[in-house]
Every structure is written in structure tokens, then in C-alpha cells.
Image 1 (cartoon, helix red, strand yellow):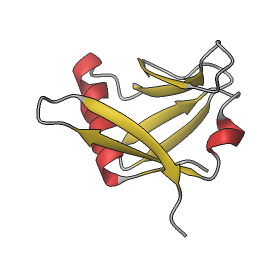
Image 2 (cartoon, rainbow, N blue to C red):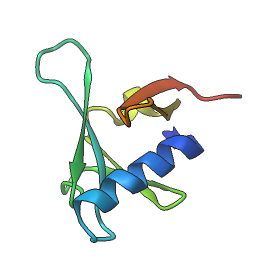
Image 3 (cartoon, rainbow, N blue to C red):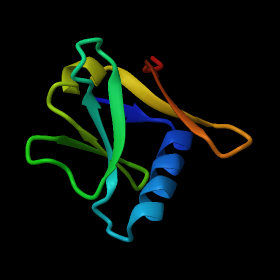
Length: 95
């Protein structure tokens, strides 16, 4: 199952809180429709009916069914630059 680093969990909690006070808000990961295998992250107020929900340290991730297998053995990390810009990174889970 996809795991989150502490940094990623904090960034997701912060982003979710900026959008709404709803405890159901999280980040949804889905695949791009362009066939490149790229992932798209977006803030969502709730999961879609077929999404797999991953919760970690108060952060919620909603996985589109098309990306569940692809991310099963991965970890989501985040990097925040000096200007507050966020970049998410998908890495192999540490063993």
C-alpha cells in the first residue's frame, strides 16, 4: 500500500486545511488521460466512489482505481521550496 513520509503528510494536511475545514478533504491521485503514465494530484473534498482511501498521520489520499496497483509499493514524499512551492515525489518504499 502507498505510504507517506512525514513531510508529505504535513503538506497534505496543510493543503487540505487551506481549501476547506471538512475532515474528509484530501489529495486525489489519478492518471493523466494522455497515455504517458503521468500522475495528476488535486485537492478533493471527498473521495470518488471507487477510490481507495489511504490515511496517514491525519492526511488523506484518494487513489483512483487506475493508479492503485502502480503505487502499491511506493512512498509519497514532498519537497517545499523557499517560495512555498510544493513538489511531490513518488519513490520506492524503504525496506
